Image (cartoon, rainbow, N blue to C red):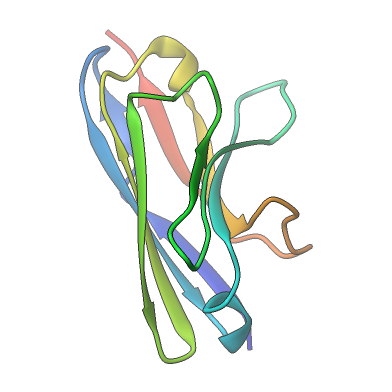
Amino acid sequence: QVQLVESGGGLVQPGGSLRLSCTASGSIFSTSAMGWYRQAPGKQRELVASLSSSGNTNYANSVKGRFIISRSNGKNRVNLWLQMNSLKFDDTAVYYCNVAPTAYDYWGQGTQVTVSS
């Protein structure tokens, strides 16, 4: 059974930091590249960071140098994190984890990140 659970979002001031967490349950995730996606109001969901099972990372230009993705693999489970620093108003969105760069057609509930003064 596949399950994606995100947490760690919240309200933060510009320049602040947050650390998002994801637990991806299911054997399919351990050997897959995983990523963090976000969807801002009125915008399409976008991939902001990805990390392969071998350790290769990719970041969207908008978050490069500010966000860091990491993961740990367990039996039938992947834990994924996103350290977000120097947050900006434009980072406000619901954040999701999923396989990357082509997500599975199954999404968790996401975690809301709001950057506001």
